[in-house]
Length: 97
Image (cartoon, rainbow, N blue to C red; front, side, top):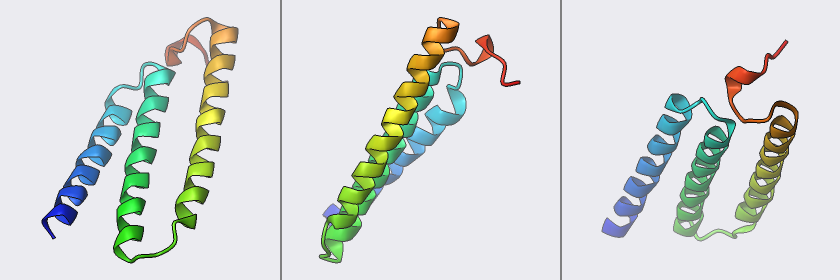
């Protein structure tokens, strides 16, 4: 029981830290993408805890990993195209219009 509470606490700390970085450090696109990946990692850890507690199959984790890898590739492609067109990853260096 104590191990489960420790895992919940670790998940909660990971999720809160990822959200705090996402909200406060939005100057560079790379930092925003890394904080989003940290949030995805914490959600993966949470799903791993939940699925192991109910002793269910881990197919849902594989589907979640596939979607998180696709999300990471999309973010990386946006970062690369932004650096090629604007020369840096500052949000202030380009306009959205």
